[in-house]
Length: 96
Image (cartoon, rainbow, N blue to C red; front, side, top):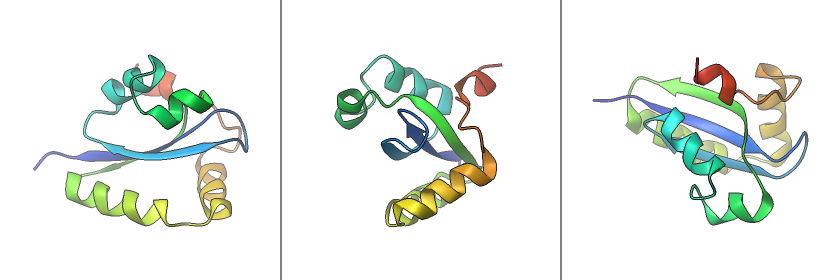
């Protein structure tokens, strides 16, 4: 079974957040960056990849995404800041 990714996008530090899941993070990020990823992201100019975690099975990634989406905003921000305190755009790291 193929793996998957849970990711969080932001438009700026402490800005609007979007949580998603995908099998191919590079392809999905290209969709978000060209405005075809989601209407919400396009509306609020959300394209900065600030958090990503890989799962060995897509089913596990989907379960994790559903759980994270239910979290309070403060918990999501804490998760981002623990892994990426500067809110760097991780897109450039995944495309190396």
